[in-house]
Picture 1: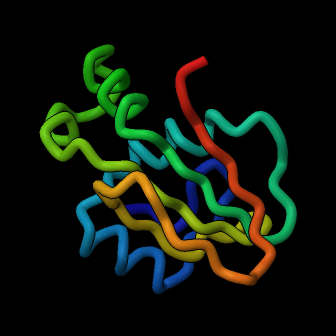
Picture 2 (picture 1 turned 60 degrees about the vertical axis):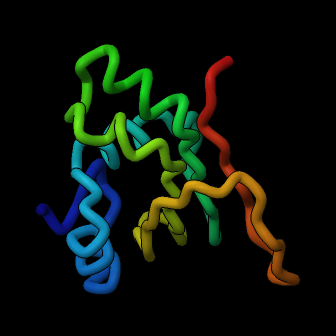
Amino acid sequence: MRSTILNFHKTEHFLYRQWDRDIDDNILLKSLNALEFQPKGKNLIIVGASIINQWVKDAEIDAKYKSLCTNLFIVIHGKILITCFREKLSHYQGRKDKVNYILIQKS
């Protein structure tokens, strides 16, 4: 795992979570590449399971992710990757913190 990807810096926490949760750099690369603007402040990027499955189908990422059927969440602050995780649930409890949400989905 590299400590930077597409000019985004990975924190030590991010690197550990990426390793612990088996999130490949290729998935991060595809997800961050899909951003159509430069994020400012704190953002939550949500990559839907359908998009990940499409990337697997198109042979753009490893097929091991198809069976997981999970959404990918990436928390960033500017150009710093804070944490990442995968989750099967589709409903999430909101917090009072103001956070920008970026949803990468099929159009």
